[in-house]
Image 1 (cartoon, rainbow, N blue to C red):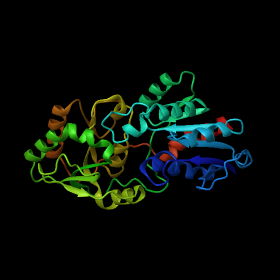
Image 2: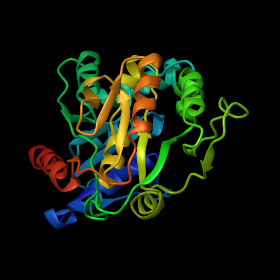
Image 3: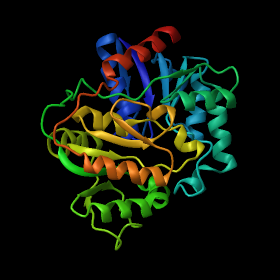
Image 4: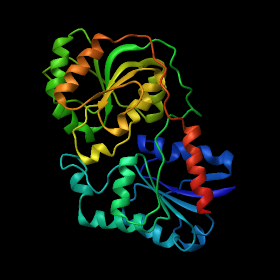
Length: 320
């Protein structure tokens, strides 16, 4: 059994679920054991020599760079990024923390040491290749974890307009607030449910329900059994950061057979998605989708982890 030293900013958030702990834990049947270091990890060459490869997710801390430098002579380094981490929009709440020259230097130096860089989208891969000429960049799409959750597109859907996200999307909601309010006025009987961050830009302007954010694993349990939204909306401001983001909202909606409204960008040209070009077309499409909303799920083919993990396994076999 080979050992993959796995360093991730969180072990339980959505990024870990889709990009590190979730998929890598399933490689043990293929001869790879994922090892998550504890806080008291002994960072010495003697300890590192026990591992066969290093996986770094979203490296941005000096400690990440230190680890990569120590590991470089001893094992191949695999870095995974799922966001355009060097070009955050100024309205992103992480902008002041991440868009400093010190952090960007760490990101650049760490990614330059990587033997392979994986991204979640083709757009992010293209941008990464331009920033790091000569880098070995591979795309590993986000996928539904069919090891843990079967695809359930047979039970009835819940008639609602559903949105899930963190405060990193507050500017996206702000840009589309007026049209969301307008859609609610056109369809006052329709439920609008927001999970995660509070849509403060809608408060006092329309009635909506707020579902408390939960652990990613628990959320996916609820998604398949209780939430089951008929319509999921993905209002995104048009910037390079968002154009590089993945379509996990479609993956999650598609698992239960719900439809999605998303931007008219390559990443979102998928079965079951109605695409908008701007806030005005978003309103018209949302209104039409609400009018046609039904409880009968549609069968949507979403990427499955059992398939995308073959890419990960190929990467490890090539590196080692």
